[in-house]
Length: 200
Length: 230
Image 1 (spheres, each protein chain N blue to C red):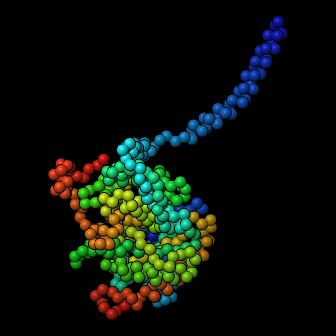
Image 2: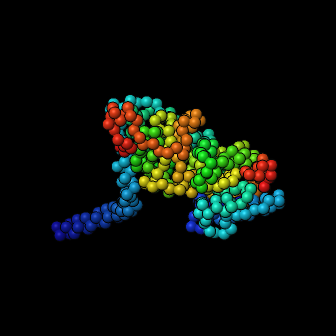
Image 3: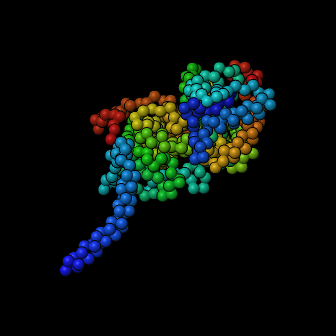
């Protein structure tokens, strides 16, 4: 499940050159989708045009899929241009899952460890292509990830502050390919709960 | 005599014209400058009212650790040691360090919070749960993005952890309201870990219900009621 963040009345980060995060994300999603489909994955999107589903609507789409992984795509307003970072929910969030019933607002809790593994796989691929990017994923308490019941990561490119939009356009095929390779690398370790031994 | 009088009048008029020619551009510049000075907003006025927490003469000057953006790595925080007169009262102490954090470091590029943001209120419950209420500018002026928003929140949490040990976890409100996110990414509906050691040792869980019961000893000694806003 690919999630181009923002959209509609929420343009996301805006650069001095008039670059809008929400517009660029559709292009990045297209490139990533193409790379994933080339690897044989089925791809769904939370939005395909300039609409802005709520956080919960986006999570609802992802949570209805069996054996899905969730990738929310972002472009920052700060950070070293030309780098890409992957974020997952912090370990402390996993500790909040108590009892056998997990509430909607804590849907990510059982997946925190898997998400970290998924994030590290994608970040490792990105670090090989984009100099200055970290080797491992980082923790961040991201609203969109919290309600997602699947291995879930946020991928953030830096940044809308570039002088020319073409700098970001040139990154997109490489980012899409690195994400697809990271998903393929992660796939063998993703055993869907309730279907032991079976890969999605 | 009458010719002299006319000469003096002409000279006087000449001086007046030259003076006006010099003074009018200056006057015009002053009017333009005055027009550019914005009226103080409601938020600025509130900030002036809420920020002035002058240290008491009895507050000891101690070394405190503030967490701003690292000069070497803009994606990380770095501790900066400064001398500050700090109250022993945890709520006043938290307000003093957070106001210093908001004021920013000497190098303004390294600040983590927007310069026009203000701390409106700070509450501390007996179980170590803190609630920090910031002005709207914290949400509207923070750069949008996972990295910048997480740095902002982490700088608040790490600065409290280093200087106010009574704070275990933190809830951030914006003008008294719970927002979904800070600026589109980082979740403000949850508590943030302040006492990282307590979480590691299992003594603190983020979904732990808020406990506002007064410890028996403290209640007996002080007759206090909680939560107290100062």
